[in-house]
Length: 121
Image (cartoon, rainbow, N blue to C red):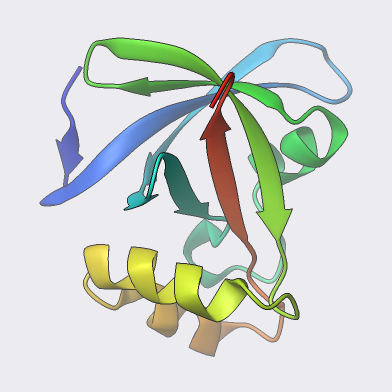
């Protein structure tokens, strides 16, 4: 599996469907924050959040794959009103070449970031 999409680093996030219980996989741009990974629940600036965000709110134990490396992680939603949000947003927005600022401008929905902490870290 490739590691870059549209020239930016991507990971695969595996969540458990909150209603179906089935494994769902999403390819997401990420940034590093120490040992953690940071992704954005933007859905391209849609007024509704991506399904994977609902899944991680219901079950924060997720799977992450970067290139061939797979590991369990715990997802923590960082909403826009939390102190870490601006710093984490800047990290991943820079990696994604400013696209997330454009997505946020398209919607009044506050777009959260999600911190993925490798299990055992």
